[in-house]
Image 1 (tube, rainbow, N blue to C red):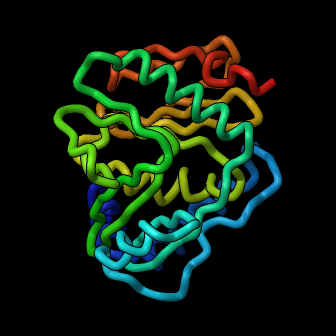
Image 2: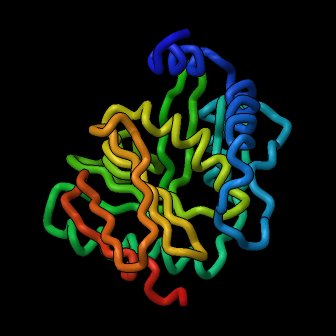
Length: 227
């Protein structure tokens, strides 16, 4: 394989289990880098059972714990820290105010995103997302987000930077994927228009340019109330 496209096609042909192993190995190469730090919490615990999409959706309606779904496997999600919640809410409020009156809507972490990668059906719960155009508000998931935002935790960072960074970009409507660190000013932006190359902002006075929705968002507004 000589090109990025050939590698991408080969990765998509792998099973969900094989992709997780590959993603874990790739992320392990960067373990020496400085990443966010907070007490780890349990995340992505396989249920041991394989469910159809229909069974998953029915189960999720009555479950007290939210689960993400990858290729028939369930991955339990735990509660967020206060800092995580504050950052997510800051972003959601800014997006909602900016988009008010237009065709786009802001959704928070209880709304799933459904996508298909290779042979796998996948449902993720992003922290914040934006979708535009007519929306069926009775549905419990999106299929066409324009923008996805994840707030990082030590327990989720590997998945957010690896598996999800690869899988989300398979959504045709997605234009931007944004990762926000918790304990330091660090925002990473990936854009389809830039072939998903990472732009990392680390200065407290930096401004994140969300081109997908024509919004500039200062980092001090993202982290307001967390210091």
